[in-house]
Length: 119
Image (cartoon, rainbow, N blue to C red):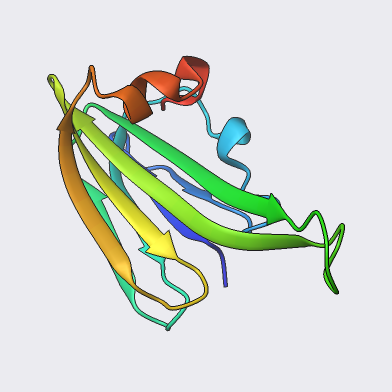
């Protein structure tokens, strides 16, 4: 199963990859109508009606102990931006919990994102 499916305003579609290779950078430069995003527990969420979208996966590497040097997927983020507000969905890949926050576009976290990957 793909991580996400995108429907563009011209009704064409794009299938995302997986958590290791999301294919986010490969999304065509078209207006997105909706994103159908698969969750680890088998559910899905839909984001629609935003001007821009952002996705990233947070990976940590243990520096010591039994798992030293091993990369582990921690969180994935899906963000919708409309005007000057951003709705952040933060998915905990270990517990399945979802945290949702609405912040201003001047929020420190939003400003820290690589701006060229907004779609």
